[in-house]
Image (cartoon, rainbow, N blue to C red):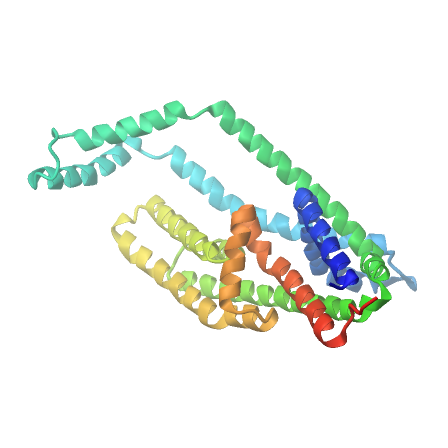
Length: 362
């Protein structure tokens, strides 16, 4: 067997093992590369601005790009503050006795239905007793200290990850392609042509994919906001923004967006005392999200996935759920870009081996 091919395979294996052991750092670099690719356009545009005939320093351009992005995030948070505060006020002012009575009514109906048909051999009131015992045991077994520690650990992990991604992204943007040039400089001459071809195709496919995602998010935001506004749903724009961002998570995202829209629309209507039109409003919201989902599945996703990364839908399905198994929702979001990189690299090197004989005999 060819010695170079063995060495290449060994190098790839070692790199894969190291990536697995240092998966957190690798994940930070992947997120930072995507983040820096998004901020590359505003950074370059700001860098072209001249003050007294002098271009702004690269560091200033990068910092201004980060500031713009942070401003967008701040506006996003401010948009949700009225919704969250209103829900908190509603929950604090909720009549729990009335709520409990509303819960008892359907429970009594189900219990009577089961007892009348003699499907269960128990005394009247057994169903409510079992529900009370279940919730009592649930809260009794809940370890508050453990929950607080988990929240603190999650918050610290998110904070460390955010700082790491921002730090890496800053230098990726500041060096303006230095990281890419250093990688290219390490490529041996025998593999240079096929490696450059792989890097070019990866960059092109990923840029197409990111641009397609932006189109998808804007389209979903537009459709959901228009549909909910015509349905007279309060906080229609806020729900639309959440639905557009949640849709980044394949398969699960649309369900999260629709659930959020349904909960917010029904809770806000309950606050206004219009409980008689609950079913009508719920049907309207469900129809809006169904129309959006069909439009996304039939028009947007085929354009983004099939044309941008040139992969079969079955490939996408398998890769997304493998990403979910490895890293949950985050893995589902980044599964397709990572798969694109691995897929294009493997295909290009295989093409080089079969056609161009880049792994010649010693």
